[in-house]
Amino acid sequence: MIVESNPPAAPQALANSPQRAAVFVKLGRRRGLRATVEVTPAGLLAIGGLVSSILLSTAVLVRSAAAAKLRAEGGREQGREQRRAPEAPAP
Image (cartoon, rainbow, N blue to C red; front, side, top):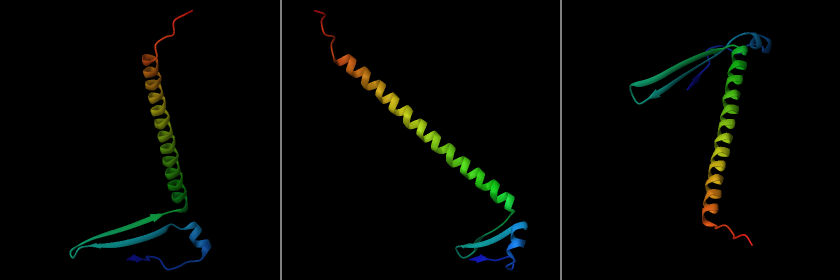
């Protein structure tokens, strides 16, 4: 269940004030988890920048790993072909 901790405010006030959220999750009969967060607009921008940089760096790592694997497989196949194919005698 999501609970609003602040009443709705005017849009101008939202732009300058921190945003707050709270949640309570019940796990079983006796256990529960309560979490609250407060973030300013500048904090949201910082979080967005961090997430985008993590995603971009992950994409670069995956691409370089795939390229390295292709290079390694290509080098192995070329070596196998050279060992299998005998050299043609010179005329």
